[in-house]
Amino acid sequence: MKILAINPGSTSTKISIFEDTNLLFEEVLRHPAEELSKYPTLKDQYGYREDMITAFIKSKGFSVKDIDAIAARGGLIGPIEGGTYKIDEKLAERLGTNMVHASNLAGLIAYDLTKEYNIPSFITNPVTVDEMEDIAKITGIPGITRKSKFHALNQKAVAGKVADKLGKTYEECNLIVVHLGGGVSIGAHQKGKVIDVNNCIDGDGPMSPNRAGSLPVESVIELCFSGKYTEKSLKAYVSSEAGLWAYLGTSDTRDVQKMIAAGNKEAETLYKAFAYQVAKGIGAMTTVLKGKVDAIVITGGIAYSDQFVGMIKERTSFLGNIIVMPGEEEMLALAESVLHVMSGKEKVKVYKG
Ligand SMILES: Nc1ncnc2c1ncn2[C@@H]1O[C@H](COP(=O)(O)OP(=O)(O)O)[C@@H](O)[C@H]1O
Ligand SMILES: CCCC(=O)OP(=O)(O)O
Image (cartoon, rainbow, N blue to C red; front, side, top):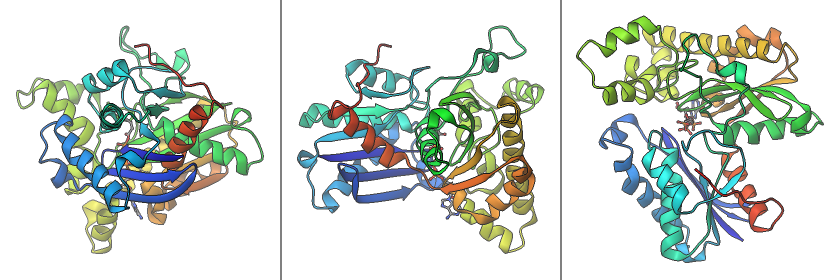
């Protein structure tokens, strides 16, 4: 079975074609912030990202008609159980109305191909998978609750691989998984459930290449009333125009490393501060797991950087076994899950709203 997997992230679009679980072709297209800033809204990126996907299929000598199923990364669709969901009208409508992150585009592009070519399409472990314990959701203000928005697909896929390495099942392990991508999420996985995680898109947890992370609330209130921002522009600032990008004009950590090598002290301090915040987040999650941690797993694009991972290790190695799994397992996880539901090995879920 030929499976097309599509995965738009905040700084990249990843596209793969699998024959069952054998990877035939893959491309990772990186999008510099200047390129994406041409599009005023995420919806406006639809054509840009879709064209890349269809061009990729053609460039590999395929036509969309050769594809048997589409595996799309799942976007922000509200708190939901993990699993694989068939994309239907209701799910596509939800993906279209809650367009806050590029991952929502995956299902929309997939569903348009479903309608045009009659190919089934699915999303798996969308970014709003919610397994958080009630206690983790409470804040100091009644009515404001913490939400689960994170790299659920990759965190669970990588956690599964690490469990294998440790000779256990995912349900037998306690892991802290740190995804270092365009967004940064740190999840406490307890016996197969992500019982706490920072909401990595709305300003919670460490800063990221282009996100603010947690901020002092009073200063945020001052920004809200400064007259400089609308609600929309301030939300965009926090979730896609902040972090390293706001200070240094790049969201590519390889550029930051070049700046540091060239003697840029501001870049050096920021990179250290970024690693410091990630390490602090890991420390916090060890308390969630009451110190019972089988491994701390570091994954995502920035995990390729020995320099960055080294700074995290310096502060956290006393907490336990650190396993670095650079990049992501998302594409294979997407293909596998579609294969499982198409073959009846796993039950496909229906989005109920
Ligand atoms: N070899 C590398 N060394 C350092 N940073 C890297 C490397 N490869 C990718 N990155 C960084 O990883 C980040 C993107 O991670 P990725 O997980 O691909 O992001 P996305 O969230 O867009 O899927 C970018 O900041 C990029 O600069
Ligand atoms: C919405 C959470 C997922 C996320 O941040 O993904 P990217 O790192 O790809 O932007």
